[in-house]
Image (cartoon, rainbow, N blue to C red; front, side, top):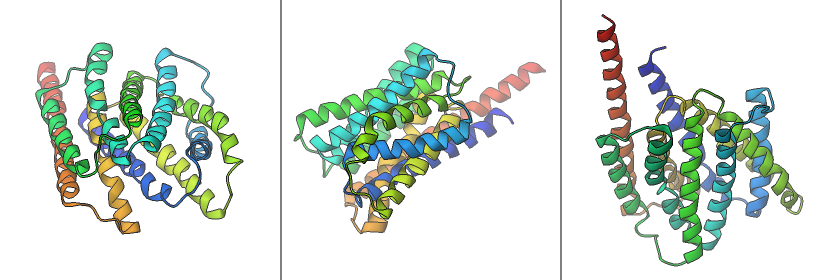
Length: 290
């Protein structure tokens, strides 16, 4: 399969991952479990799907594999904790400062230099996020805001660490993270009230919202630069309230609606530009071979 076809498939996988990630909001609103219990139960089912997908337990350890697993655990913990200390809008928006760190980390460690279009796309997406969350952002919850910013940094480290394993098996990092999360957080599950509906939600979150989503993501990151993968991932916070509106009736504000369209436009611009660059690179290689 040529590089352009691989790229298109990778972008599709990234979009599917973002869609699955975005479904957490509407489901978490239906649960009364604590955050640590949700992480423990979700981690259990995510571990199962990755054990089935990989059909092995990681035995070879590299610094990037370990770093990706640690960053994944820290991102989940920091984000969940930040949402308890500040507004949900603040937590999501500040976490999606991650592309700033991705640009620096990807250049320093992977030598992936952002193009001019990458910078333009990033600016458009940030503008859209400001519009999207503009009516809900606040200066309240100082410590929660700090943790949300840190979750953006750990998210960037996670993405770059996944990308650094493009010739390896980045999915093993997610399995390691899921197993560790399950071990440390499952005791909190035992303290919660168990119902069929709660376990169905937890099973979905683990198998699909985390498990299958990261299967898509770790397959895609092998063929997509770290920054572009993160930019496509910004579809997640935009789609999250869409599902809440469709299933729970919470309406989006005018700014949020236009902000969502701006973010979508930025993501599309990034994807089209990268596809053209890949196509031109392929054509140049073909011409050079003659």
